[in-house]
Structures are given as structure tokens and as C-alpha cells.
Image 1 (cartoon, helix red, strand yellow):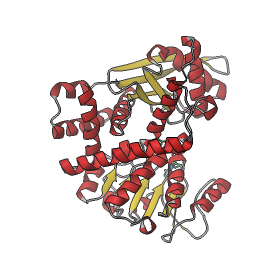
Image 2: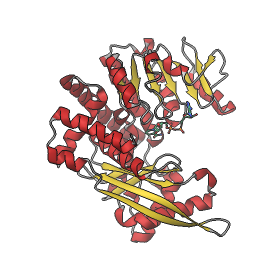
Image 3: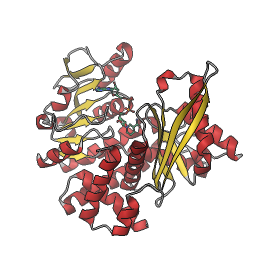
Length: 405
Ligand code: NAD
């Protein structure tokens, strides 16, 4: 199954469960618009290369399309369509007034110079600007796209339309209209979900053991915030391997070690294990925060965690998901657990269109309210329909979109 077929299977499951109006189900089975563009880029050696770019605008009944732009060799039309569908679900799950969108360019960004990356990014906007805007479609960073790229795109857009529209794109640097708190918003949203989950499972933070796969932006911030709240982080990993100490890790000293050596491994007082083994530890909460499809039908039988908080996008395959539910392992799904990122992107847009700048305290208060409300709505749906939290989140989201339609 390709990613879009997978997304449609999830839609169909929720539709049957909630007895969705067939016309709405039919409409939601198609993106409203998928744009494919050819972007010519003058390369540093004087030649011209043409890159294929996409923007899928899935549904905008709740607000302007919202979703990142990724630069990756594996980008495809089906993948962009699926990702824009999941953005619709994610925004509706946390009840923010944004629709679902996603973009991408088929390119290996590591092969481009800074100048070529800038010309490609400006070229993407030159081809798509008529369909973008703070009131139409608001992109953001995704895999291998950065605040600098967002800055080039905003600048190109404003040159073409002839007026300032800082809310046309989010994930900008602070100097360029970005929001306070954006850098750790995904982790912070995951933390609010974890706190609610701990309440439901009657877990005491100080006695709760946590393993985190991935120590990048999402994983390292999650580790340090949870550790500050008293949770016992017993294992973490990065691409070089994983470390474990069941007594708990001193995350601030570990972050220093990672900065100095480039990896978490060989941290004093820890045992080194593999990135597969970290997923199989006997912990209260497992947090995949690196790659997709790491919990599969092959290893799901060995998962001992009591619960999983999906900070990464798509870490669990549909087959494994079913087995986790049968085993009674609670999974807080990606569309909820990592929605803190898009929520603060929405705050950035909101500040830009109102000409405001909020303090970090205000951003975090608003984020907490949104995440706690969303978690509890999904939990209530899980109980009402007797399903896993992923299906419950889809039901919450589709109910909101369908009602507005
Ligand atoms: P990142 O690039 O900052 O970090 C990725 C981490 O994964 C790094 O520590 C890297 O060493 C590790 N890693 C790479 N290969 C690995 C492997 N084979 N095994 C274990 N670890 C490996 O990325 P990020 O921004 O932290 O994103 C991580 C996940 O969170 C992705 O799935 C992303 O889609 C999702 N996510 C991130 C955000 C965000 O705002 N950063 C928002 C929503 C979802």
C-alpha cells in the first residue's frame, strides 16, 4: 500500500465507526487541489536543472491550508497527498482553524550549494504564489527545509504580490517574524500529552521510566523537559546507537556530552545497546522521536512498554498498531502527540496577521490549553467507541471537519 492508500484506509475505518455521511466521506477521499510544477534552477556551473515540486491542498473548511514543504529525493505526488490529508487530521484533532496542506520538491538537498538552494526555494514560490497567502495556504518547514528557506520564500512571495504578508509562511526565524517557543513546541506539546497520559494511567512522574529513540530537535527537548518534571529518562538514542541506565540519566550532562562528542553513546555510567533494543526495553513510556516505521509486525511482539507517545511521524505500521491495541498498550498517536509544532506555527500565523508578538509564557499557556483539551477529547472518544487513540483522534478530527462542511 502506498501512503495515500494507507491514509484512505484510516479514513474509511473512522467513517464506518462514526456513520459518516457518504457524500462527505466521498469529498474527503480526494484532495481539493494538487499542484505539480517544474522549477528550472540555474546551477553554479552554469547549467540548468529542472526540479519537480508539489503542493497538495487537501481541505480548507477549517481555515487556510497548513503544512510543511519537504526537500527529499523520495518525495512523490502520493506521499504529498497523504501528508496533506494527515495535516488536515492533525489540525482538526487539536481544533485549530487551519486546513490540511503539504508540499515537496524531489531533490537531494545535500547536493545543492547555498545559492542553488536559495534559487530553488524562490523558484518554488514563483511557480505557486497565486495559490499561497496568509488567507489561502500557509507552508512551513519540514524534512530538510529550514527557517532560512522560509525567509527566502516569504521574501520572494512578497516581491511577487507587492505587499508585506509575514503570515504567508511559518517556521521563520525570530528576527523575521517567527514565534517564541517554536524551537521546542513539538516536544512541549508531547510533554502536555504525556502528563495527561500519566494521570489516566495513574503513573507518578518520579517512578515513571521513559525511553526515547532519537535525540534531535524533538527527542532532546522532550528528554530535558520531562526530566525537569521528575520523569526518569532511562534510555535515549541517536543514529550511532542507544544508551541505557535503568537508574536514570542526567539529561543536562548528557546534552553537554552530545554537543562535545556528536553522539549520546559512550556517556559515562551507561550501557550501549542498539536502536532496535531501545524499543524493546521494559519501560512505562516509550517515545519514538526519530524515524517512521520503526515499530513493525516483526518487532511488535517484543515491545514491553506500557504506553507509547509518538513524537515522530508514522513510527508505527498499521499491522503493528493493531497488535499493540490487542496487547493493551496505549498509543498516543502522532496526529495528537506531535501537534504542538503545528499549533505554535498557527500561533506564529495568528501573531503575524494581527501584528502582535507574544511572550514565551503566553505561547506556552495557549499551547497547554489546546493540547490538554485535545488529549481529553480524544480520550473520551476512545472510551465511547471502544477503539485505540489513533482511531479516536481520526473520529474527533473528521467530526469537526464534517460538521463545518
Ligand atoms: P532531527 O533531525 O532533529 O532528529 C532526528 C534524530 O533521530 C537525531 O537524533 C538522529 O540522530 C536520530 N536518528 C537518525 N537515524 C536514526 C536511527 N536509524 N535510529 C535512531 N535514531 C536515529 O529531527 P526532529 O525534528 O527531531 O524530528 C524527529 C521526528 O519528529 C520526525 O519523525 C519528524 O517528522 C517528527 N516531528 C518533528 C517536528 C519538529 O517540529 N521538529 C514536528 C512534528 C513531527
